[in-house]
Image 1 (cartoon, rainbow, N blue to C red):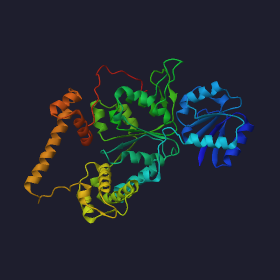
Image 2 (image 1 turned 60 degrees about the vertical axis):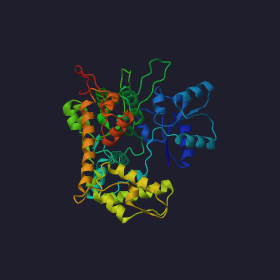
Image 3 (image 1 turned 90 degrees about the vertical axis):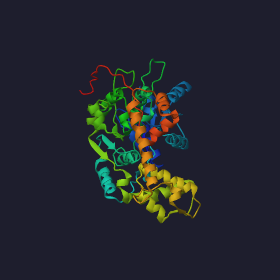
Image 4 (image 1 turned 120 degrees about the horizontal axis):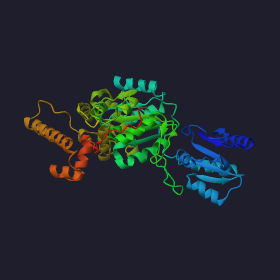
Length: 443
């Protein structure tokens, strides 16, 4: 069912529209003004032209808007569309035309997370997974910030989506951003928005405003600059200040943050603000590596196989006994993400109505002591090389550029980037050290 917000101070007209839309299965909440309504809970806004607020562009960034006018004009229509409205309709309007406009607008719900039952499913029968499900059900309905910790590939975003689905904000948007993928000089504008430099320019709302009424999921939050961290504290307190603005606007956002790094250690070293850490660390989820949940490996593998077969139009594929034994014996350093890649690779390479074999999975179980000495030595040598790479990059990335690091290691910049991704070595941001400025975030 579509949830529509109708803003019109003409009571008779509002009642007529509400009755019309209700007969077509649309749930309507009528009001005379937007005020402080949480817009994220609605699929569409239908608003009388005379009730358009001054922050209309901010509203059109949160949900699709249709403007209704008794005496429309081309100039007013163009202005409304430029500010982000999906449609501008002149009354009286035919019911079919209005319903079609609502359907078109809802098809372009901005930034709305695509949440399905399968997305929310936490697969597994292990005690760890069962405990995780119960805890999500318990804390999901609260509005407290949540911190999700765990290795890369353990399903931190999946847990965040499950928490959003279990909250009172489930019908509102869940906005996701990976803080490690946005350049440091752009992250604040991306998150908090940009105030227009003049009346002739239009500003842009950020992801915080887009998530108003819903959930903002900050993946890899440890990669945020100290400046952005300071501004994020105000968001936890219910305020957002655009870049270049002298004032803050109220926001209703539930924050969920995740990282694979040790935030406590980063806080102690001064690379992560302690005041933000303690505000986020209200409820913490520590996700276990897949190798510690061996009971779940086959359950997840079977589910991934089913999804991959549907997606790739393969039929009759099953996991053979040898493949299952290999999956159980393997240590899965890349966790569920690596398992998903292995299953998809096997499905692509297999024939219909065949059995998935260990060779199709292309993984090797943990080396046993009975294996030839030269094989164990080769494996140890590979591990030693990777350990050297990790130590070299971590010890020198503050002093050397990416190009210089690659040259020292005798590899290309592309290879350096790929190894960073595989070995989970995020690029450390260089920060100018200077006197600590009190931002007032602690007040």
